[in-house]
Length: 87
Image 1 (spheres, rainbow, N blue to C red):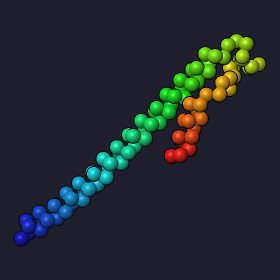
Image 2 (image 1 turned 180 degrees about the vertical axis):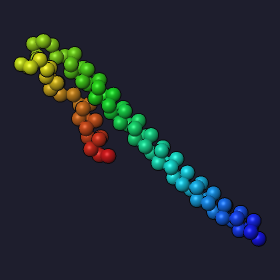
Image 3 (image 1 turned 90 degrees about the vertical axis):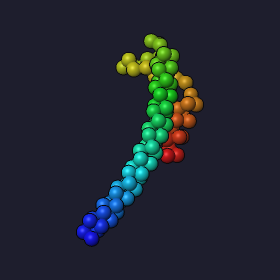
Image 4 (image 1 turned 60 degrees about the vertical axis):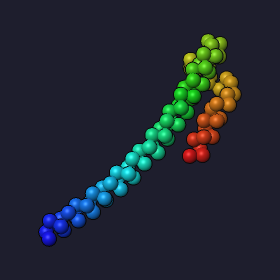
């Protein structure tokens, strides 16, 4: 009888751990997808920054030597910022 009760208790604990594991795996997948989207947005913004810096020549620098990044009005930054606001 003791072994039977112990088996039932272990089975209950095992089921509980299985459900927790399923929840953790689902949460991990959700976070992985979110990280992938954020990485893509980051890459788009980095490419836009590189593009703007390449357009900023010596004549476009302000007095402190920092190039003006507002040279062009790119739609990719607007798309990236609107996507991040929707989340």
